[in-house]
Image (cartoon, rainbow over all chains, first blue to last red; front, side, top):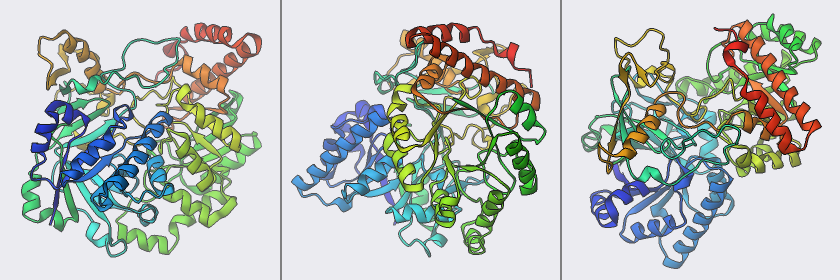
Length: 272
Length: 334
């Protein structure tokens, strides 16, 4: 049975508001929150949001982006707060996962003994999988899979590119029984930067950039861009560029095609 | 600060040494590297190159920084590792005289350290971008990397703790020259170079390469990138007009505002970064030589001012000099 999730990060929550977000989450077992691509969108209040959804009997994945030392400090505070909230509220940690896109998070979770399950985020898959010319994902090296498996990382976040992919996940489960995959749709992340497309601007010649500036401008809008040389429309949100693919993921899940491909969870992203 | 340059032909080594290069690196067929351009052919060629490099007083490194260690079906890989072909290729490169390996994949680092112990020296590639001191510490303590190549999306201020940690642990640090590696996207994580994710229009100019290098200017033959704001900004909004240019830049390799420029170079220099690198292996030889010369000049200029003036004055003088630097005058066209 393919599990269903919905991505309700700070952008979605800003657009929708909590009430609408809760209603959008109906029909989905998992809520993905946090920030996959930008550390400036992390906040200690995220821990309370995680607990809010858990109390609504949702399972929750908290996504974390690549981190500078500033972001590591914020994330450590969030993890400690989460740990405290789990203890105080007696909530089952089995219903919670952390998706990481920086090894610092993987280390912090393991070294502090928080007992949170770890997923490899959408910026990690290239360490382990190859996406071939037909948009199929293949786990290509035992070394990489073994390394992450040994760190308690069993689940990988992948993006839907063009069509429902074939994978070799099922075959690999012979060696890694807990190996599992979440497929994000319909937006596929093509590339990401640390410096924000929307927020950072201006000519600072002669003065070093101190850090990726942020006024959280990205919560105002995302953009659809038409490139003069490219047929497809591209989507820009914050520091990341996306393509949107139309494959009917939910029908494929219902028909069992995804399970056949070893994909046991799909994650709907209402926004890029 | 030492100067490191890529090479792809043995006859480039002497010319690079004459331009003041201290270290060279290459990639070799048979070992996965980030990008296949300018690879040298086999370990015999590597051995000859290493012998010559050493006779010229240059250290030689091998980029073995593919995102994955091998690129085959998993079951086939299992067999290959069983026969140790993967490690045999690394052993052959070690025997050929490579002083260090530039590695990105964590599992590969672990496997190499386990197999070769202290006999192998590893540099952390920027393709596995290390943005914080915790991750840096992990690579230093866990795998014994002797050098961290900083990603070019880290400002000097943000890199301070990594640099301090490296210095404390006796690990070297390396940055790219801002003039020759300007991509604003995270190195190793970008798919814009792969045309399977988009379709070029039939009437696009033939000069275009990858999408992000298609050479789109803001308006090209009357065409421009159209940006439409979704969620919240009205089409007639002044804010949208201002943001359109930024969105336009996002779909080109200029991308968002870069972190590196001559000012950040000086700050990195003052912070004590050990090595300045240039690494476009596919550049023709005259371009490589000119870029290596430019690297040596920028390091010498920074050193000259830093030794002669208080730091703020030195930086101001350095920036004034570098502002005049002109790519087209200094670097031959490809």
